[in-house]
Image 1 (cartoon, rainbow, N blue to C red):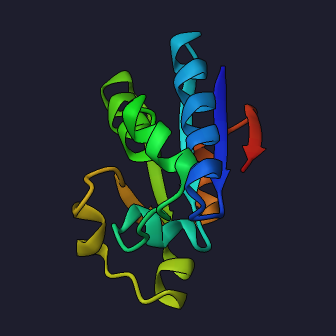
Image 2 (cartoon, rainbow, N blue to C red):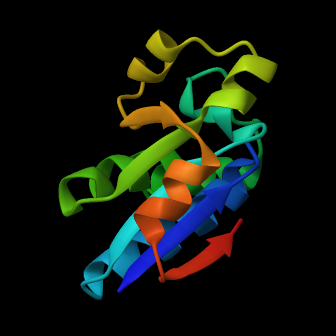
Amino acid sequence: MKVGVILTSDDVVKLYEAGTYIATELARGNEVVVFVTGRATLAFAGRSAPPDTAEVKRMKELHVMWDELFSAAKPMGVKIIACETASKIFAVAEEEYRKLGLVDVVSSMYTFLEEVGEGRVVTF
């Protein structure tokens, strides 16, 4: 089954939650396509620094920071599409997505939904 995941936030806890969900779906043998929009574009461009909180420190110690989870999911086949309109709104150039190397393509919600087809869509 195909699973679509829409990410809208650059909050590290929300991104961790999404990363865990995505990794679990991949481990279950499902195809996962991610659509990064809103402030999440800033995180995937490497422009969003995590806050210095106790939770973030524990996440780093446990190696469950969102970017680590997404990097581990890449070889498992996750496809990540960054929203072209949100990228323009937040002035994120396509080259900036190469910093973390997570985004496969900058495109539209239409492209994302075509990729997911009749699969389910989850929003974080």
